[in-house]
Length: 290
Image 1 (cartoon, helix red, strand yellow):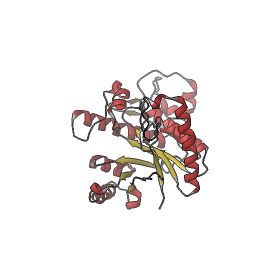
Image 2 (cartoon, helix red, strand yellow):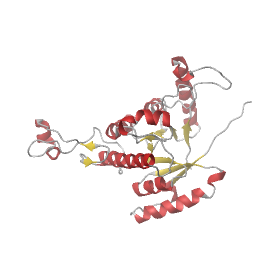
Image 3 (spheres, one colour):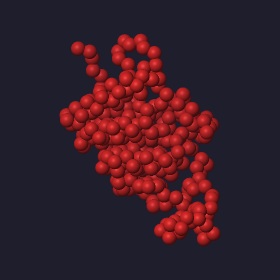
Image 4 (cartoon, helix red, strand yellow):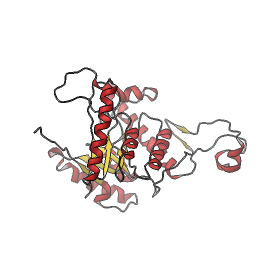
């Protein structure tokens, strides 16, 4: 059994009544120092991984997990073996092409210690702000138009990330992104060294990221946090992601049911996997004051 720390950093202490603690540069420096010390210790006692949620605009100083990729790189610099990842990056509001590149870069910079995690977003303040150009915000799994649009963006963006990770060049035209958009491309090196990327009349036909990930069997490990959305669970069963569910008394019967459904969904789509390939369980580590 392996244990991974899902860190939820705060920039305020117990009982503090200070305003906008998340905006204070000195507090962030202290947070960085504490996180480095804690993760070094965690690695020394056998923890195998570190990850964060993705949150933004948390000026209150609660769950200050701005840019998990930068955090991952920071922790990887100060540890030797610990894997680093995200649970997860909001895949609905970002440019998936740039995210695929950034994750691939992180995989190389960490020597293949990176794992990726993707979510649909659960916080409207930042999801709605970041996703306004696409008409995307966070939703409940209520089958509303906003929920369906969010899910369509999520699934399209993942397929684009996966294609960019696993293929040298791709051409995918979707509802939200065109990779690439139609444009003239008269660049002799492309014609000479990537001829499939252009048409005979000089139009851009395919694009690829640089670099592709270091882990290529067929791509870095992918995890997906979920709560009660069976649609999300079945999607990742088909696509090769590993579900991560926080276990509590309410889910005592739901999680085994979800696991059975996902294993069958995976088998129906040609994936011969076992429970350990499909589900990771999370819990809360609570320490009292002494």
